[in-house]
Every structure is written in C-alpha cells, then in structure tokens.
Length: 253
Image 1 (cartoon, rainbow, N blue to C red):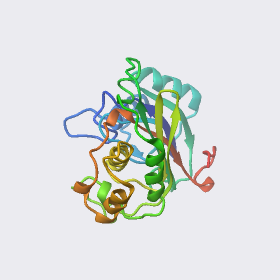
Image 2 (image 1 turned 30 degrees about the vertical axis):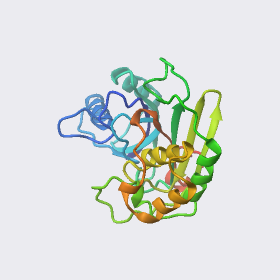
Image 3 (image 1 turned 90 degrees about the vertical axis):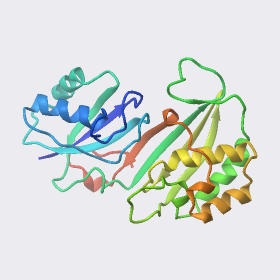
Image 4 (image 1 turned 180 degrees about the vertical axis):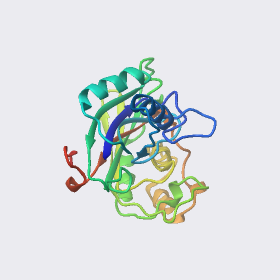
C-alpha cells in the first residue's frame, strides 16, 4: 500500500532534504524514524529536494507499507520520535502508482528578506540594511513568466536533461519591514530560486538594469547572473498535485 506523507521542517541543522554520504539530512532522519516505528526498512521518495539550510513549510514524500491502521495515532508517535525541527502534518493513502515527485504539477517557494536587524528571524530571513526598489524588481520578475530556459540561474554542474521550466508566478510583496518573493513553476533547477533572488536584488539596487536582466536570461550563462541569496531565507511552501493522485484526501489545487 502506498502512502503520501506531508512534512514541514526547519533546514538550519540539515544538509538538505536528500540523503548524504557523511552529513545529516531530513530524508535520513525521517527514513530512520519510520523504519524504527514500523519495524521494517522504509525508503521514502520526496517531491523534490531542498538544499542545505533551506526550509520547507510543505513537502510531500511517498513510501510503501502494508497497512497503518490508526493514522492519527501513528502521526502522534512519529512526531514524538522526530527532532523538534521536523514535523509530520499528515499521512494518507494514495493510488498504488502515485509518485510524490513525478505527479507534482506545480511547486511554490517563498524567499524572505528582512529590512531590519531582527534577532528572532536571523536564521530564517536574509537581513539587508538598504531597501531595494521593489517596483523595478517586479518589472524584472515579470520577464521570468515569458522565458523558458533558465540555465543562467542553474548550478553549473547539474545533471539535467533540460533547463526548461514554466514559471507561472513571480512577484515581490512588502509586508511592514519584510519583503517576500513568491515564485511558482512546474519544476525548478538546483539553486535556481536563490540565484533569481540575488539577481533581482541587483536590479533593485540598480546594479543591473532591466535590459541587463533580459540579457542574462538570454545568455544561458550562470556567470552572467548575480550571486545566490543565502539559503536560510528560502522556503518550499507548496506542492500541488492533480485530484486523481489521491484516494482518501485531496490536496489543494
């Protein structure tokens, strides 16, 4: 029987989602805890992978097991065994051929920028001391919606067949002393969102013009784009699936 598991975590203490040979990851912690409680080796497949230090407000993964009879009680036990910075929100049955990664049709990220020194958010937002021009950054972000090849924002040594992504949302909002960048697409390349944020901030500081930003998109060259924004300001916030993926629960569309 196949189950989807909904996970949220702070990424500060982990070397990303995916298992690492020598470093601790969220996937490793979750697999080991599930294996202990279910008394058999459990392997999980995530909807994607977050890099070192990146957080997730919503990530789905799937695993196979015969039967979990009392899911609410099992979630309570699982959370009791997991570290405080990893939490399970839900577990539910899905179709036998459902796949957490390949069935996802859209993923959404947020990047948080703090415009003031805040000791309570220093591990969870990129703190800057000069306010950028948000209107300019949104004009540049609009160009992302009309472009497909994002090799210029991809980590150089990445084993992918294509750099094409369809971005359906990309905008900045100001909330008091915080800037929030929201971006949604069918898929993302490694380091892509952080590279986009860093380059958009260059636009906001008028280091990069709108014409330069378009030239960066056309260049397919990571060296032309700006520096990546720090990992601790980035959150995976939503993974969306079609209704047909689920048996006992429907995730928001």
